[in-house]
Length: 404
Length: 166
Image 1 (cartoon, each protein chain N blue to C red):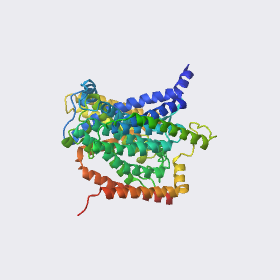
Image 2 (cartoon, chains in turn blue, orange; image 1 turned 180 degrees about the vertical axis):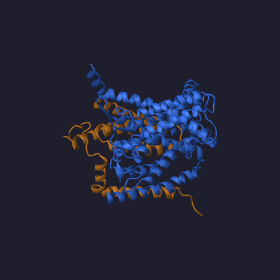
Image 3 (cartoon, rainbow over the protein chains, first blue to last red; image 1 turned 90 degrees about the horizontal axis):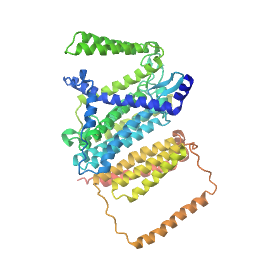
């Protein structure tokens, strides 16, 4: 009986369905909570407290937002082009969420004797697949702007398509240089080519890897990533003081939420891609014996701090909520010491923390930088980003051909 | 499985292609064309040419068609009025269409009389490496000439679009 169960679970389709469910569940929850984290972080940077009313520290805010968006009236303005108006948010969210299918989160693992990759599907051309999806994502925004039949929306849609085409070019060039080091288009192989250490302590991540460190490409990629996701300082398509809300002015309820979800999903994809291409994927920053204890130490420190603050409550409920989260942190920290779970949890920890740091960067920039003017945005793409990325690609190609 | 997917996407490609012509509004036509490109990419994928499928999506659907849509939106082109079609037009066009299809099938019949059947997933030689090798060794001259041609087109566009300087 037991053997039967394992063979059923090992079946390709069943296994893929299980992984699909896991990844989809985690991704959608993460997207909802990213919103909460963003509001909290921006609030604290601007000396506010952010959401606090729903649940402890506003932790149930995403749930409240979801219920609100689901139950709001779905307005259909009378002047829109109905078919494309409905199609646009679907296109946007479909292409944004599909990207997760090719992203690897960790190495091959062995669960109850079933060997599987921590990835939905390993395409030979994973990176090109992502580029194609990001190219298709433009249609969602452009169509939304056009079909709304509203001049602000139209300007937003036009701005967005011009901006995304312009920045796709330096982005593709910035992606090409680490590919020269890795010699593959499969995201798994790219990440695996960055395993190990140079001189025993410098990780062989693309941004450090000899003969051509990719720090510059990383910076270019992140700048282009901000533009591709229409985030501040490149959020011209939805510049609220010029265009009301840009391309999604006429949208309400779940259709509006779809655009929102697409933006956050694109952000997550860009951060995952940056991690895989430049920051060594799921490989740790220090060699193995030390690296295995870092997750535990981080969680213990976090848990300790929460309990400490719970003992000296600044607000009324802190003495209950803080210790609960503190104990949860301690428990998670101890999970990292279980030998059975280590091969799964350690790569996940490194991958998620790198992605998390990059996501924090996105939020940090949003709270800090003002918006570009549109002519500055275009000038920056074509007169700075493009030549720099071409020269960088040439230099990388030369170094790789000469020294590798 | 492969056969089902093939017929599904072949049908989508044909229907979208007809839709490009039938639709009145330029945006609908352009998006139908995106549908054709997308289903062609899936057909390439079924044959095993992953790189070509991805390039098809990135270049045609992701870049060129986005520009088309962009221009259509910018010019705010409205729905086309259908021209009045007389029965003479139909009477002349139908035999011509039949003649054209007959010619195409004749050429295929004579040109590839004993061509083997296409097998799904059997196409090798479409990897990025193979494409690169072919482009930079065997087909270097056509490749370079095409590049120069595109450069000329770009310069021409810039010259035409530039405002007259005093």
